[in-house]
Image (cartoon, rainbow, N blue to C red; front, side, top):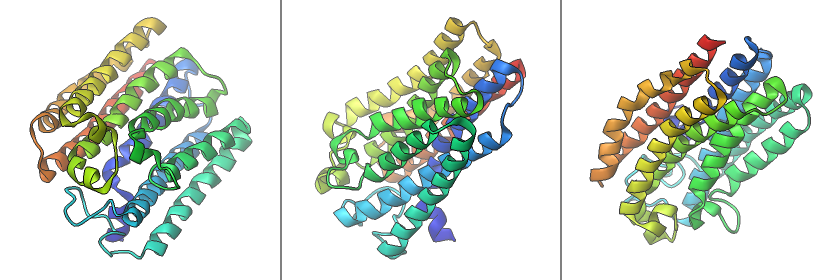
Length: 293
């Protein structure tokens, strides 16, 4: 169980939980109650298992391509280290995606076929991140796809399964959630610049260099809090969602590490810290939205 827990990369799971919390809370803020509890739980489970499936697919594909070597600075990858057989990791990948697909089928019965399309595209994005003939994670597009799928798609999809429409509030707040989810990947790629470059994995951090990637990390943090303020101002509130700003102090430690450190332990800590920041930000925003309902 410890091996499979490590393979699921729990430090990245806030990126799956956060958008569902915010999207669902937006629906509560709009109508004063939670319209569909079952849909909220299915969206949460589906998002978590898409993230786990993506992590397992990444573990398998990076090992197959030789990107995970003994000198990597990040946590141990179970396929490359021999802790789990490649075929077992691949099987676990499809089990995780299968659970996510089952959640999607239920959501489709509630909110229509468009949810199936979103789920299929999301799973394909997870598989093709480091898999397939031309993985986009090796071409510097990982951050763009994380922003789209763990920000815009996940927040607005969670809102849509509740009310079957889109509104300015979830659209604007999805930008902040997506920015912090993207910041998690930026930390990961800044840490792995040297080993990724040797393996021919041209992440965005490899392409633009460490210093520009560090500036990108800072910019993403700024965008998250700016998007929160601008969205509430444009939509006329609810201003209780500004509780999310109370998470800002949690950004200090990971930001300092990303800007000044290159060693694995410090950047692994920054990765965990950024995940905690995303979790706190989203939980506080969601709490503010529910309080205002």
